[in-house]
Image (cartoon, rainbow, N blue to C red; front, side, top):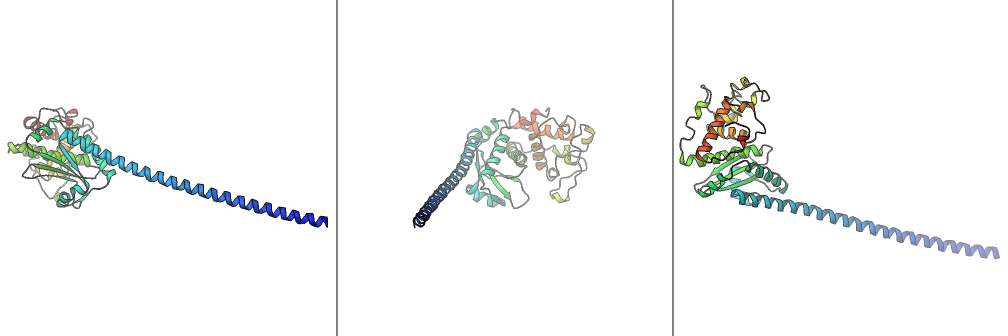
Length: 296
């Protein structure tokens, strides 16, 4: 009897002990689940705040660049919904991506530093109001374009492209030429003499060949004889004389070293000199960026 009784007590004790272990285990699991859930919530919140902070930081940085460009150069940079009415008229798509805008602004900021600051003061004194419109893309073949209205509002539209800086300098030269031509109608009357005797500009780029074009030559060679028949930096430069000058100027403004195709005596040097001389005579005596690499 005692053995049976003792066995019953043991079974009861074991049962109670088992239930206690189960209870404690469930409690611990619940607690662990709560902790993990709270940690996940905390991590998600941190991630959300981090993403928000990054976006806000980029927006604030963009505002800084825009403010600084306005103060330094009297140029208003616009993008997003503020450009809706303008971009739609030039077959463009509005740019709304703050990260892309940030990259575009940095490129333009550095590009503007390549110009003598006094030209922007001159523009302002003559009543020019300048805008740079950041565009996502164009629905036609444009990378960029410049326009001027009767009130001398000048707008440069540039799309998000790897050639953004080059495209910007191209359009900036159109603006420079607008300004210089206001008082000097035959600014480049002798420009045609800088082309081959048998050459005439052709606006339909599809009808053009690569004859006389720099980028069909061996650009890396230092042998000047390779440039004896090089008159244009790109095929697009063969469409109109004003595009020829803008393309030549853009090439001058993105140089990173002395290039033999701009060495004294080459056809491209003569065009670069004609552009440089007009800028000095009709705009400013201050040096442009290209003077570092072209001895003009």
